Every structure is written in structure tokens, then in C-alpha cells.
Image 1 (cartoon, helix red, strand yellow):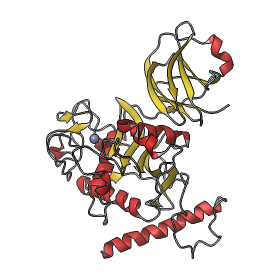
Image 2 (image 1 turned 120 degrees about the vertical axis):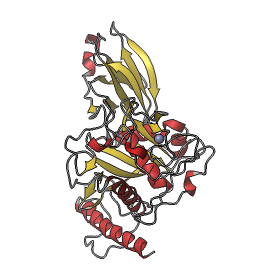
Image 3 (image 1 turned 90 degrees about the horizontal axis):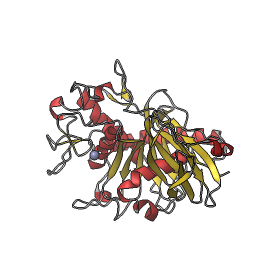
Length: 387
Ligand SMILES: [Zn+2]
């Protein structure tokens, strides 16, 4: 118990540092002196603070829906201890190597985000909840090219079929790993019944889901691994942190037998030991497959009549509605004619397969052009903004 107290105290001090930073930027309601501030839920970071280090790193977010309950998990030390716990476990598996975390002034930089969409809206996306967290967060500026975002989402419900989700490049590109704290997986306990870690050296289910989803976003387990199954998992042992299969998951080990994704040296296969997200950095650090993603800039709407699709290379574009009204997404075909593809509600996004030489138009509800985008070699992001 004493250990818990110490951990919490450290985090409270760290949060005092954050308060000072936020207030020095203006706009905070906290008073000038930070020394005597009692930490309350409203004192928190709502933007990504100045980074202690450059390079690839994991930025942690505490996210609630527009109508979601705010349990202040970012400021009461809960999330900080959770992250510290799974990263400490990783270090025990690797002999001292862990993941690079985004810190500010030496403390874990956790950002609080309240979504524009309600929990019912997010829950209705079901297994696509992670994708929608990613696209809405991108509209709010959480789309920096060197960052993987780990979201503790304090929401989800009956339609949320798991306690977490991750991108899985190259087949599913993306930057967000998410925990659904109120997910309701069929056949197992509601996610809300899983306690957070209460000590650094005792990660629990939530912590293992957290690092499991982070591993997916980093590209693991790659399909070339000998025991890979079910899009990014291994089937050889249920104690593997990346196991998926018929047995109950009982994670304690990173890559059982070291034959699939860590120091496995499988031919023509990525290996976690080479990841650019590791600390210390390996000799030849490798970003996840397909990284970095590119923020696409818009081509002038005045040029639409001049544009048409031509032969090119395959790529993908993540279209995102950054406005608070519906938008329409059109592909400009080989004669330059708009072909309707999708209507996106506010802050919605979708991933389109396309070619580097194909132009796309995003319009408002009256089909007035808001922007035109063409893909890049890696996945590009196209965010529509109001005129
Ligand atoms: Zn998984």
C-alpha cells in the first residue's frame, strides 16, 4: 500500500508542474502561484505540452465523450501509474528496454480531450470506435507525424465489442491505440470491472490491453511471423501478450520462445527489437510500416475543372470531416466528373483505397467545394475545414 501512496504523490507533484505550464500560457483559471495549488480535476493539460525529447514517442490521452463522465483519471495519477506499469513490465521482458513516452518537464504528458460526439454516437461505431477516435483527434491537432497516440477512452457500451483496439499497419494504417474502459465484450466481463494497476510492478488486464494495442499500431505481430493468426496475434501460447485464440488470455510474456516478433530474426519480417519507439534506440531504428503519414494540403477549389484521375500507384487517404456539419466526399473520375462516395457526419472519417494520381473533392451539404486532395506515397490525411 505504501508503494501506491508514493506513486500517487509523485504524480501529484508532476501535475503541479503541468498546472504551472498551462497557466503560464494564459487562459487558465488557476492562480499565479503553483506551490499551494490543491490538485483538482479541472487543473489539467488540454493540449500536447512541449516535448522533452524529439523522435518517435507515445502520447497518452484521457478522452471522454461530449456527454461522458469525467473521472479525472489524467490528474489523479491513475493513467500515469497504468502507463508506468505496462512499460515497467516491458522492461522486465527486454532486460531494460521500454517504450519512448511523451513527457513534459519529466512527467508523463497526458492530454485531456472532450469529444464533440456523444458516447452513444461513439458506441454506435462498434468495432470501428478506434478509427473514429483517431479521426476526431486528428481534427483537434493530435496528428503529429512522430507520435503514436494511446487513448484511455472513458466510454463505450453495449455495442463496443472489446476493451481496446489498435491500427495494424500496413493493412490497417493508423496512429491510435485505444482502450475502451466501458466496452462490453461478449463472453467476458464488462471492461469496467477490470481494475487499474495499483502498483508499478503489478500490471493488470487494462495494462496488458494497453501495450497489446500499442504493439498492433507498431505493426505487430506481422503476418510473416511463423505463429501469426487473426490479424496481428499469435496462437502458440496464451501467456503471450499478443495471443488470440480459444484459451483464456493470461498475458505474462513478450513473444513466447522469441520466434515471432521480438528478437525473432524471422526473414523479411519486422522485429520489435528494431522499433524506433524503443528506449534506448536500437542500432537501426525502424518506424512502423508505412510511417510517417502525411497531412495532405488542399488543391484550390478553383482548379477542380482542370483535374481528373490518371494511372498511378496505389495508396490510401483518410478523409476526415473537421466541420460541425455533414460533408460529401467525391472521387473525380478519369473524365473529371464527381463520383459520390460518402457523406461524413461531423468529425467522422473513413479510409479510402485510391491512387496517388486520383483527385478527391470534399464539399459541404450544398456540394460547394471545401477542398481537393490527392494522395501521397504513404497514407495521407485529408481534413475538411469550414470555408
Ligand atoms: Zn489484438
